[in-house]
Amino acid sequence: MPRQRKFFAGGNWKMNGNKKGIDDIIHFLNADCVDPNVEVVVAPPAVYLEYVRQKLNPQIGVAGQNCYKVASGAFTGDISADMIKDVSCNWVILGHSERRNVFGESDKLIGEKVKYALSVGLNVLPCIGEKLEEREAGKTEEVVFRQMQAIIDNISPNEWNRVVIAYEPVWAIGTGKNATPEQAQEVHKGLRNWLSKKVSSEVAEKVRILYGGSVTAANCNDLAAKPDIDGFLVGGASLKKDFITIVKSGSK
Ligand SMILES: O=C[C@H](O)COP(=O)(O)O
Image (cartoon, rainbow, N blue to C red):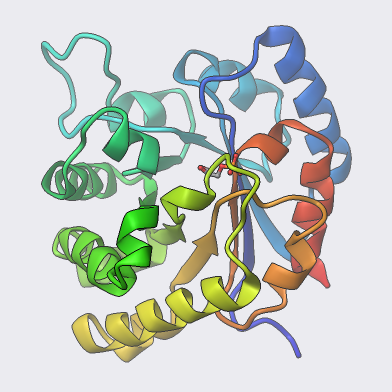
């Protein structure tokens, strides 16, 4: 069956790499990751955004991993959505679980960042996901719907075509323990139903919902086969040639 939504493969490099390693990644991305059926976007560390943008095939997008909620000012150590745009990158990941849980970002702040990044014209990739104890307490939907509410409150109807959501259960990130295709599908379907009620059936049908958390070359095909999984946000495996297999899983 043809896919309802264009497959999306995101590579979040997190705080990894140096110029030499990045050159190697760019080489295999340009050679093997340009696919008309798959939208590919990679997120290098901020200091390498411009370097990667200049060397990468223009058909592959480049994302910031985070940005603040205003254009400029006394916010030492941070970058703005405007700066990401200024170096010709057009995406930003916001509310990644490491921003939420390591750096203490709140739902409210993430919502404000989403609003600002959209206002300057970036495409945004907001992330949501429950912790292990929340899943075990049966609170997965309560948590992801709460996180999503703070995001949807900051998206205007005409901006939804620049939004891709990533569901990343915290317990699956970097642990080697991915959600099963059934577990991920259940949450994605629940999110789509919720969006249909809270935003519109049109948005629910069109918005892409990615899965993230220990996606590998070995498990990507089974996950990609699920009807509500529209792609991946990949951490560790996006630094390796395994990413090629992951990108191609969306073309099957
Ligand atoms: O943004 C990516 C996710 O945090 C997943 O990371 P991972 O593939 O290393 O588990």
